[in-house]
Amino acid sequence: ESLARLQRHDARFFNSCMMATVLGAAVSDGLEDGRVVSGVGGQYNFVDMSNALDGARSVLMFRAAREEAGTAESNVRWNYGHTTIPRHLRDLYVNEYGIADVRGKNDEDCIIAMGGISDTRFQQALMAQAQQAGKLRAGFHAPAHWIDNTPVHLSARLRAFRHDGTLPDYPLGSDFTEVEQRIVRALGWLKANTATPLKKIGTVLRALGAKPDDEEAMARMQLTAPVSLGDRIEAKLLALGLGETRQR
Image 1 (tube, one colour):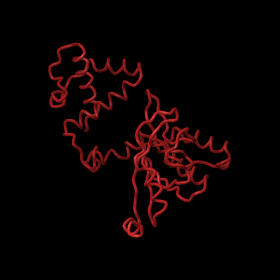
Image 2: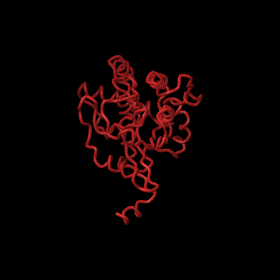
Image 3: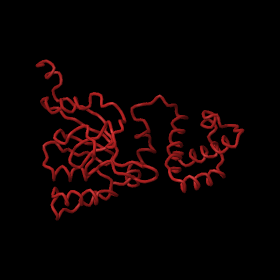
Image 4: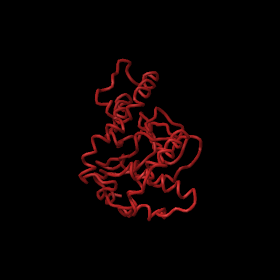
């Protein structure tokens, strides 16, 4: 054990989770209705190890929000009915809006730190729940910069880095070809814009006038010469998605 500890001095353990609570608990492997999303693997062991080793830290990464049936949902929760990593093992949380270092913090400071990396649309409700539970002082006012935690503001700040190639879709590399990466972006756009019946109707109507201008992508999806009605609609939708996500 002594050798293992020396080899892991100042270790950093990175894992991902689906949701986190403002009190520092993490949800990684299942939902509160009992559904299992994935095996927990060694995540708990790594987090536990980070608390036992000298200088070690645990980093849990997650998205601040998600789209569900066309509705935005926060992944920073007040509480949740399933826990993978308990709050007493809280350490570092990272998402698109920043880093929350909550190791050793009291509950109020932990709530404020997690609130600082939550999406602006959900901050007020989260802080109100904390105040109702007596975990956050009544006179708390969110710092002014919290209002910038929105997808639109984040996209605007990163746009220059996206355009000059500093921040590609896959910074660490990918097995996707350039053509496939364009298709992935287009399909992601189509998924978001057909999430509700109303959005689906609007997107299909827009697609009727779309003209394909990415022959490589259409060929990769075998939609260069669609025959059936379904294939023709798919080709139109893909052409629209490719046009909407073209990097200019």
